[in-house]
Image (cartoon, rainbow, N blue to C red; front, top):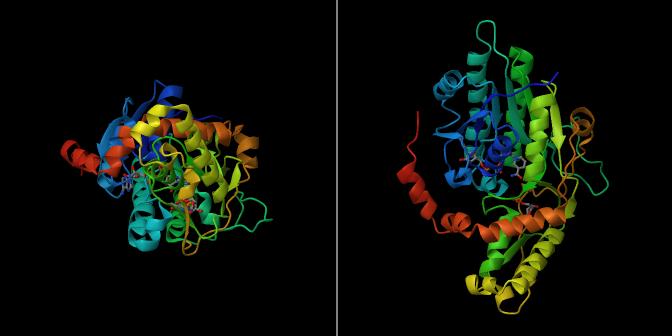
Length: 367
Ligand code: NAD
Ligand code: TYD
């Protein structure tokens, strides 16, 4: 039996994947109503929702009264939970924020959902929790990929906080009967990704002639998932997933970091060779000075506790939901590069800090 979301509350909808999800859902289901709840941390950017009809409520997922009010006032039937502290390096330097947002924040949302949706005779609803493959820990070169039954073994404070939130979501289903689903996905790439993650950081560094800091030997393997495939996967889980279940969503593209970085450098060089205007826009880029971008590659100290390999086996999502990624990395990456070159004002405002001042001036906080 399929579920038909009509009114969605999307937490973290001004972040990378959440914003892509809002745009995806509006294209796929133009009749649906969407409310975004986002506290606009450093990673939240209302500009990423430009062109969307969704209403942005600036508030914190830990504000249970606010969430209950939104669920009731807007007759929300589906909560899609993206809001999180999401960067592993930040979790190493400041783990407390990860426990606060990812664990306590998720518990607060679950409590609000229970209070509103399970009151009286109950309301048809879905609570979808977006998690990560990092909860499963690390793989050796010959280990089979992660699947839904892989035991949890988180290695970073980020992964541990996501694991904690996954367990709470599971418990609210088994203890209180909340209709939950969870997806554990691999590394996403695509438009609107905050330039602290590998691909946008290295791209923008290459355009400015800055070093590309490669952790350790650069042979760590990630399974790259185009964000649009991830959004399609979440849509499939929402509509056809079994409540109480988890689904692994991957891109089926396992690559060592150095391969990704070499692809990125070659793509930047090709783009500059084909468009002389780029050298005028980015004169500090090696590609503007006749040098290859890979001359910026710099090996630096490894990240503490750095997981060696992630890989996802999507067989359950494929068999039960008909999910399969459609973006191959070569085209997906080329499209992503083209997006960052075309949307310079989006990332420029982040890099020079001007968007922060604009957010403070234009977005009042609720609650
Ligand atoms: P992001 O950091 O780009 O965005 C997170 C968003 O959550 C931001 O808009 C931020 O303002 C908001 N937020 C943070 N704390 C909040 C709070 N207390 N209340 C309300 N809003 C808050 O993250 P992302 O990359 O879009 O990731 C989204 C989700 O997907 C996260 O749960 C993350 O763990 C998961 N995930 C991401 C990846 C990836 O490759 N990016 C991979 C696997 C799983
Ligand atoms: P990241 O984008 O931070 O995602 P995650 O840690 O969640 O996988 O990093 C992707 C890979 O790139 C990871 O193996 C760490 C590596 N990396 C670097 O080598 N240098 C960097 O500056 C960053 C940000 C990441």
